[in-house]
Amino acid sequence: MGKDNIEKYSALYSLLKKISGFWHDKIFYRKIIVVGRENIKPDCHLILAPNHQNALLDALAVLFTMKGQPVFLARADIFKNKFIASLLYFLKILPVYRIRDGFSNLKANDEIFRKTIDVIRNKNGLVILPEGDHAGFRRLRQLKKGICRVAFQAEEAMDFNLNIKIIPVGLEYTNYSRFRQVLTVVYGKMIEVSDYHDLYRTNQEKALNELRNRLAAEMKNVMVHIESEKDYEAIDELRNIINGRYSDDIKNPKLFRDRKLIARLNGIRESNPNLYDKICSLSLDVKKKSTRLQTSYRLLEKKNHPLGFLLAGILSLIISLPLYVFGNIFTLTFLKIPELQIRKIKDHQFHGSLKFGYSFGLALILLPVYLIIALLIIRPWWLALLISLMIPLAGIFAWNYIILIKRIIGGFRIRKYIKNKNRDFISLRKSYDELTGLIAQLEQ
Image (cartoon, rainbow, N blue to C red):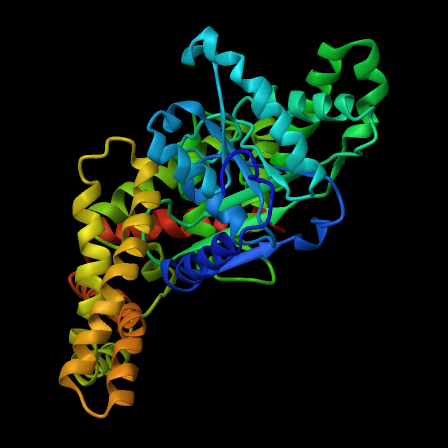
């Protein structure tokens, strides 16, 4: 599978997608919430437009939550090495050349454009990240015109008979790089490019701008968008303080709760700026104090931390210690090694992508090795097979084991703060209660 036939079905690619998709969906993330999948019409000529905050994981989020073999556009500089380029073509990624790549290379876009028409006509689904590059902020940045230009030129090349639809896609991560987080993917309603055909025929630049503005507005409707740069940190933290408990909620995903919360804040910023400033100030105050006191928001939500519950937790830790030790076969090889590899990577938005890539690559190599070792030293063979298959599950258990330890330690810590009447904790509790009280009033 190469560039010339990138739109064609590949059985090998399909197999790789299934294997890597399992690791992505069941191991790397603890939950993936998908909303609006019914908006993807497989019989339509589609361009998908996700927001771009988390490097390669954004592309994988789309790939593993839709059927088929979509084709992606990526910046051309990663195609310089011939071996890497052939690998990227196999992975159904096409290069896009920019001015910074040299004017002589821009002509190569003509060939790429012809391939995008093949992709769209073949109904693969063409995925273009319209912000151009990634940034670790929950905000939609200025969209590039490239996605609109591709859509219009493809229509023009086919006498405006393709009826291309653009689907805005919202991606949200509870954390950009940590293992076992929650990914939410929202597919918005289709934008009909044909609505702008007449305008494009008379004024191409205006049509490009209007379609881009429409796409930007629709993308903001399916993602967390914090407009304010000045108060970004406060609002971003407020989402976790107020809605962190709902991260795993499928029926009413946290993404939509966050959007409602931000909309209310935007409203009072105009109607009651003093209240808005107070909420932002309290949000940062709670963040600062809870960090200093090593207290999570989930612990603050609970007024009491019963001693019986904490002691029962300790007992469960003792009983399950052997399974935790066994689970460290997974955590030490598939989690710690990737952590060591990414330390020198300055762009933190690549950390999650590299963790996934390294952990999946190690799984392909080491899990068969572990199986062979188990078969050599354990009898009967079915028990060896069962134990080797349990390694990823035990690894997930070990990960949750550490979380429970932190939960128990945190509970004892708060009990100590309360017993000693710690002034800093009393201040934190006061700020937290005041903040949550103000937000509760906004929701009435």
